Length: 455
Ligand SMILES: [Zn+2]
Image 1: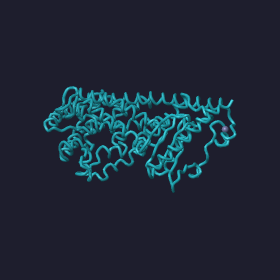
Image 2 (image 1 turned 135 degrees about the vertical axis):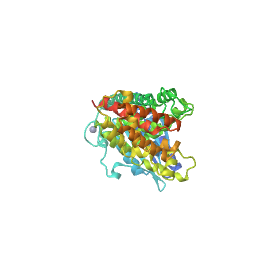
Image 3 (image 1 turned 90 degrees about the horizontal axis):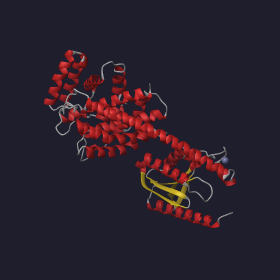
Image 4 (image 1 turned 45 degrees about the vertical axis):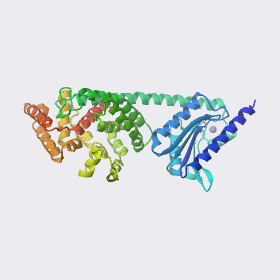
């Protein structure tokens, strides 16, 4: 039996939606409009699965393309859930992005993602053929989707079954992503706590000393690390995706900003882990990406490089800025690329030296971590040292750490005596190798990752 009232209501809502789209695209000039709807036959489009599918795709677009979105809205009518976005990039690029989602996301074939532009007083829909792309295939047989839908080749039961299966598959994968990102964030937390627990640590905060710091102690770092961990989980989950590394990085940066806020709230506005959030966020999401692709541990380095390929663009136009960060000031004054430079080269020092050299160590953990710290201090251009002191101090730190390594560091009595002397001198002179501390935590994190996922 045909329910004419339902059809009328459906057509009425569709007309309203089209009008709404027209108004939107006219109101915001030179923007590209994207509309997401469920790709489901008949007029009964809404059920908990179809609604959730549109919600998931809406979130997917918002998560990975937030940077380009100037407007977004979601509502429900007789067509099911409808999502609209306005992008501030050209319609060809946007169409390409949406085709990728339709083809790569597990639920991509369950939705229609339409792209529109406004030209000469007209709303124009962009089709796949405009991009010389093949038409969409039917999700049940291999014919063109249009042909099957016109001919109604498949029963509603068949289609319903496809949606249910895809939804189940997505839920399974999402559960996997949750578990994995939680596991990664736990190792990040363990690494951050291990770093601040390491002593002696040359002016850094540890359980036995506040080092060269007056406004924070060991417990401030525990507060901070615990506040950061959930955000690291979010960043890792964002990394567990088919999207390209560069997009993952753009997407985690806004989480990083929220994470900094969380840190400052937890520490009463003391900067304990700002650099750490940056480094650990990148590493955690790179690890997740590599695990998603089922690649090797060594691929993490290249993934990081791909993620941050444009990172030095951060320094463009900083001479015009009023409030410069530590890193920006050092770049302006000394050409220091600092932490950005470190990730730009894929944390070469950590991957190619630290992880390789200390792979089969028999030294117990606390001393082992102190030794890694000394090694890092001997090579890193630590901007925290320069910012608190000056370049000469940095050179002195590097040279004294090199000498310390030569006499054995933690492994000899001579080294242990020297460590004590140096630590006193650091504290007396208010030196703190904070950048090295972050890299120590990241080294510990990566060793833990290798142990858990690659052994
Ligand atoms: Zn078909």
